[in-house]
Length: 135
Length: 131
Image 1: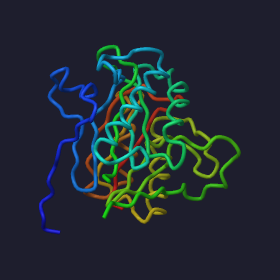
Image 2: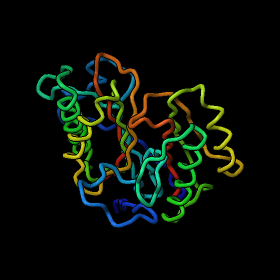
Image 3: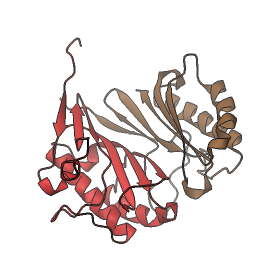
Image 4: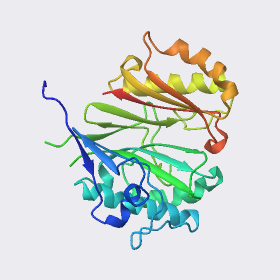
């Protein structure tokens, strides 16, 4: 294994979900390297318009995880290839609401996960990032 | 060939209690790495939360982590990166005193943050290790 690993950028098929480009932020949606895909922290964005979608926390989590599924599938991976998730909530008291929706997306053999709360930008109620296996 | 993904079952756990399945796996092996969930201080056998001081929760978590890694065929000296979340950064020295007893020299890379933690936890520790 002397071959040098290369990294490539992951882009969503739906351009509305390219949040960093729309907001001119200095990061890409994700990077693929070797066996792994590293996604940036994702926040609730309406896939129809690309605008922030800040409803009740359950809806924000559903929108974010649905967009994460799109991002992974755009890269040829899927939610069931996710190995690690970080869920950051603006308010830790939203834990139960987040959990209820989260289970819908990872019903069996869920990934490793850590949940905490800290300040988020733009009024977002959640930000979710993951590491997945490619392919 | 795509990398294999394997769920690591909790070591020494009793058969799953009746009820909904846990929302996260304790650890997942993917490719060359083992991804371990953010652990809180629990009794590994029963899953019961063990609320204590920052020092006692750190000790419980790292003892569980050691057992979990070894059950998965890895170990503390194969850990590459640790993230420690504390309910208060004022408690960092109390965590460090215990932490230093568990990892070999040189210890893994690490980040420590203060954050609001779920379920009244004082400490959460997650890591990535070589499988």
